[in-house]
Length: 211
Image (cartoon, rainbow, N blue to C red; front, top):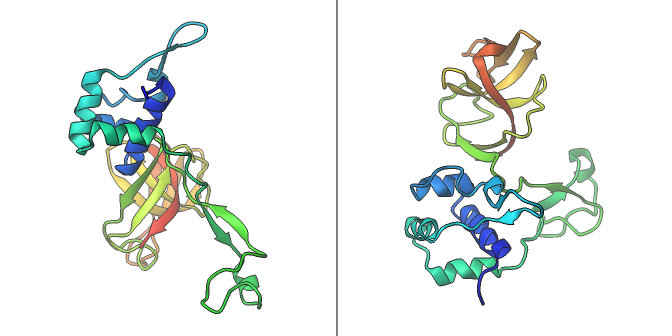
């Protein structure tokens, strides 16, 4: 069965997810312009919008870069939707009561809420911690997940901060105002650091850490 416009782009998105990257990252890996697979490039002007298709050359370069066959790529388009990524959620105090865990220590079905895990999207990425300024909370080699769209960073948040000079820091937001932001470390050997707002390229809250 031929690939429809929607299924072809779905297969590219799924391939990017399996390669632990974004569509932009997949394009770069294939030696293409980073915007080649952006959602804004998938339709052209007009009413209704005119579907745009990736070129045969683009697809060939993507398959070569990932080592995927054309048949396996087509199969990605026919896979059903992925289940929601969530896990059971319970407060620590409540977890001390009976009736929430089975004999194996696993959560029982009743009485739990759900917490969503980050879903894949272009603005979501992972960084590896270097250094010990946030030890023992974050250790060298730990991976943190941040979302550039989750820009509502507040005092007390742990965040990744990118400076205008290219330095990338994982810190706690100790204070912030219209002029500057004070970053603190968990490790007492590192003093607080104050950055003027104009020296900050972006800040993104840490959503998850894998240790």
